[in-house]
Image 1 (cartoon, rainbow, N blue to C red):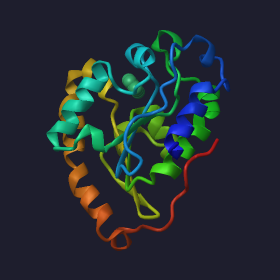
Image 2 (image 1 turned 90 degrees about the horizontal axis):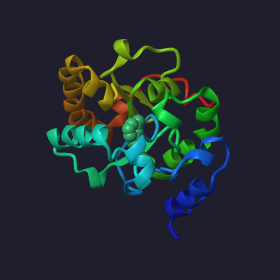
Image 3 (image 1 turned 120 degrees about the horizontal axis):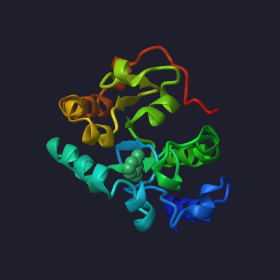
Image 4 (image 1 turned 180 degrees about the horizontal axis):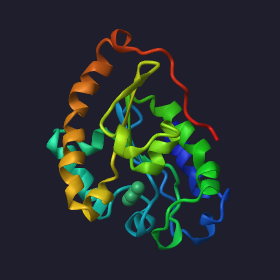
Length: 200
Ligand code: URA
């Protein structure tokens, strides 16, 4: 059994927070273990909870369009969320839920070792860019230890506020160049070591 499959089994059995009692299925993540890009969203919605897969509802369809716009095959990227179980009624995740689920995300990042990690939405951004505001830092990459961290608006936000679409689409268009840089000579672009993942 691959390390990723083993991890999914553990996540599917997880009862670290009360969401485990109300979920239909846990939604661990999806994509190949050797993915170069990892997208980290917020929390499963109704569709994801039904299917056990991330970003398969309306926000996922828009994410697919964004990936198509840069010829990035969805099967080649890794997609997950900061919490693996759906909050009832699609409310925002609670700090305790994010904290309880955080070790799973850390293990996913350790396994996948992405060259580029894209945060989708405020909650995911807050884990990697604590204290920052999405309106100020979206679309601006940060290098840490040869990995690019890249904050974007959440696709669902752009579905609700049409005015955000040009922004999220323009940010997406930056990914191919950044990924090429991440695969090339990261040392040349390295900035001094930054604060690592906010581990709570
Ligand atoms: N929104 C998210 O943040 N994640 C999903 O998987 C689906 C919608």
